[in-house]
Image (cartoon, rainbow, N blue to C red):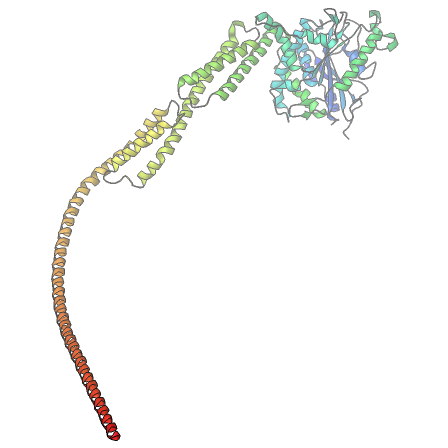
Length: 587
């Protein structure tokens, strides 16, 4: 568990010695002793308005912070009282009571501004203690010191370890609790009862219109709303008869005004239950060492003179507001140009039109946020900055166009350069092919979008840089063409001789083939004649054979016929013999 601080009484955190703010080392050692997250409640207001009484009540004590009943201011500098938080375990409640504003004995009032600003920077809940009612003077003072606190934070926060974003203190401003002491007005508007919170919001309501007086009226209200999004208001009746003010520390509650007692209890309850842990940007929860570092850093920044004095409040406020208005206008211009402009633009007028539109918006934003810009000093400064940004965009546009065109030329003509290196165009007629290819690539280059205003210049510069290459190709082409003609003539003659030789060879082969063909035909004819003669011989032999066969057949037939005839004659003879025998027998 982190260590807790038990302080029997408050100690001075920041001393105000002869107009100089000095950090008390004893208080810093106390802060170094705790690692608990801190809830820091600071109170600021006019002197002799009961600030210390409220802080003692938050401490649960009747005595502690010095309470005075005379016209002399008691609290000097900033006093600190640390104790365990009554509602948040493992948290430390740090109460900061501040020197009263407007002390006539001080003479030099620059400490008022410094202490006021420190209270805002160091606290997580800021109590603004004023008398009777909310008036324009109190609102202007809160507005002015809030702006100065923002300025002080901007110049001092880079010295803090671990703080990420040092440009937007509004994100971790304290909650605002506005306390109205000895309030005597009726909380009523148009016959309707309102709360103290509604009274505060009504006082912060803006007026509609663009008149400069209305802008001056709205300016502090806008600032308070912006830097204190969480706001609360408490009203307090007078605690007792004024003659008893000297004994406030010893008066019991039943000796005080009952409404006042109830109002103080409601105030303390809100502080205990609603006050947040002190947090820096990046979500850093402030502990004792963090607060120690923050105190030292802010006081050192004030010692360096980074915070203007109260006497120059209007001038300083105008400086702060107008400088912020210029920054806001420039930031808007940069943002809009970044979103709308796509470099490179095809024409200068396209870029200037976008610049003009963004410039008008930037000037309009400046006019809405400016404050007492005497002689239009800051508006002229803004116009100068915008003009410089326009020139810068023009230069960027030209550079972007050059880069885009260079990349295109390299991508489009790179293959042609490789072909040249490989010697593809080092031949008769190569220059014509090179020029033809170059024209094709130029047409392709012209077709590419968003080349910007440097398109033609970049192309001509590139072509000019490659002119020596073109000349070399041309000279090579011419030299090779003359040589090629001689070679071609010799080749033609050689070809003619070769063709003539081939022709003669063909004729010779033809004649040879004709002779061979004739010989083959003759031999074939001889062979055919021999074959024919042989055929005729075979035919004759066949005819003779057939005739022989026919004669043989005929002879055989005649022999057969003669045989049959003889056979028949023999049979007839035999029959006659038999018949004769029979006849003999019969006889």
